[in-house]
Image (cartoon, rainbow, N blue to C red; front, side, top):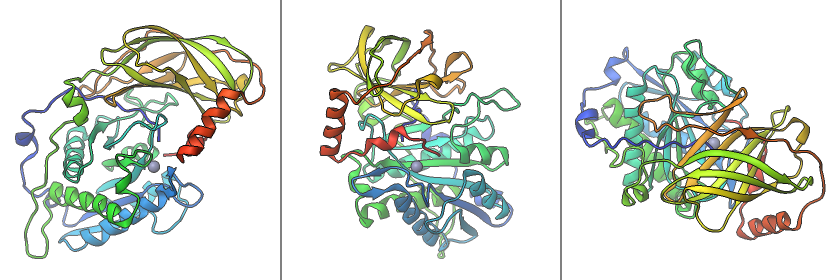
Length: 414
Ligand SMILES: [Zn+2]
């Protein structure tokens, strides 16, 4: 799902030295390694849903296979936070891991993007300071395996909450509930987004069991290599290191490591209809060309609404007037801008979260790219109306393409 993706500008040329020690991490853990695998979503919550494939089912298939395979190794026990089409709250998932005495929590997901332009595998770690280095290394094992099966490496990320919450130490809370709860319970955790379900480039990995199996094998390899687990013959698997560290292969080709910047955004004109059209003035800074900007609004009931800004040619540094579709069901009285996503054509994006009165960029991690929001979120939309012709056309086109993007405007829990 649409999420804050951040550019990691550090190219780790000395990566092999950094992560190669093959001493068993499992042995650092008292006796047996207990791993909690968390198949994302379940029950009423489908997760991403594209082309007839439902994320909750894909996640569960991966989790079951990974558990089965890992239990062929010595000194490891795997617990699933759900083992069926069960609706489990994010807190309950972590509670189950805590009860099982888990040493590590790994949440398994598949992604989708609002723009439907993203692809590749990514791993999320907590925004908290604790264990960042080791989690980043673990993420690298995953991304190396995903690269090996042909997926692009979209990077390792941390995503801050859109609610503005902070921990006692002043750092921003995690966006992902399972990472937040795990952190608060002292369990290191990762959230793996295997691929983008709405991407034609990644489609082969989720459309049948063969593809799903490849994803699961990659997970098994990453875990086995990272922990130095021994199989029944006593053999260990060394693992594959990611060739790129938090950058897509496409980005490497373009020699481009700087995320696009959004310096200001202002609602200039709104025709008063919802759904309808609005005009925004946007000041961007990007050398390679921004191809997607979306805004996420939230009302007092916590419902999210996405407005995609429309433009034909890529936007380079400059100020633009752009049209945006205001989705139906929006309740303008309670509207506030919560998040702005900006993509350029190499897949990088910057995210801006609403924090109190100001928009904040997320640049607290030294290894993540930092960016700033200098403008004001000047949003004041009033009035309701009927479905505009342009909006209807957009929906029809999406239906023709088989894209169920309506999902993206509803509350989406992670
Ligand atoms: Zn998911």
